[in-house]
Amino acid sequence: MMARKDDTAKQAESLNRRRFLKSMFGLGGALEATQSEPETATAANPGAKTSAKSSAATGALFFWADLQNGNVGFPSGLQVPHSRAGSVMKLITAACLLEEGVFNPNETEECTGSVSIGGETYGCGKGHGILTIDQAIALSCNVFFAKVSRKIGPMAIIDYARKFGMDSPAAGFKCGAFPTKPKASTARYALGLSDDMQPSALQMLRLAAIFGTEGKVPAMKNAGMFDVNDLSIKPFSLDLRETTFRRIRKGMVLACEQGTAMKLDPEHKLKIAAKTGTVPHGKNFESWVIGYFPYDKPVHAFCLFAPSGTSRDSAVPQAHDKLMSVYWP
Image (cartoon, rainbow, N blue to C red):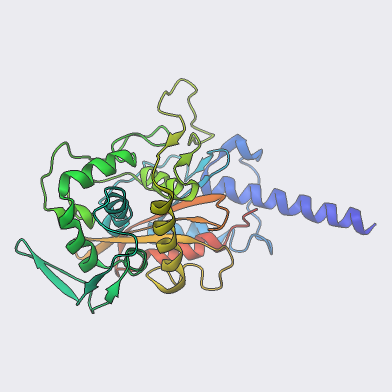
């Protein structure tokens, strides 16, 4: 009798999870749920009814990918947004620095709070002191990356952005703006502030997946919109040194433990590795949070884009609410 009750509970939990994921991500028939099924909040699925409401109120958009089968989820009928990457671009800049051998994994650089380069000043609010590259990723140190990126130049960063797929479609959706030659300073490319490079949210999701899988991303596809004839739907592979992946992944874990994404998973329930990014947008900000989890054996990648935040860290609590409102197997 007890075994039968346990089986019933598991079936109910599985059904509720499928209902919620269909509503939240628009995965259609892949989750074997019908459009007439109502959302149901459960202990394993808290906030099933509130999540969509809060998303609409804030305008934040959440994207998710299964790193094992490549299934991608996002709101049905969505026009995938694109914007400057902001500090998420530091992941690519770090990879360029390490792969090109111009910055040693154990090398350090000092952040004194601000630095002036080429007539522009880049600041961090306060000095972070002496940092390694993984610490600079965790703290999203503008001064660190503005200074060390002078060793590589803008074209090298553009080339590495291309290697990371920033010039190619993702999950069947076209890419955002991408430069053919530099039109901004090295620092602006390094910090994700150049206007001519504006990746889509799905490209940013794939970027998270690249680090989650160490460069072996399965073919990313939305089950409800998948066209078998779309040649852009194919696995994505990127070969980097193991030490490069290890250092950058460490920085993403540190970001959640003691850096800019501390509020994302404060109780370490999902063991998330993440990177935040923010760019000015009029009087407000556009913000990103991308990441994967669990960090020791990644199964899921995610990306949240907040197009009209009033503070630099507005995307983090919204991503927290999304991630914690889903039962993740």
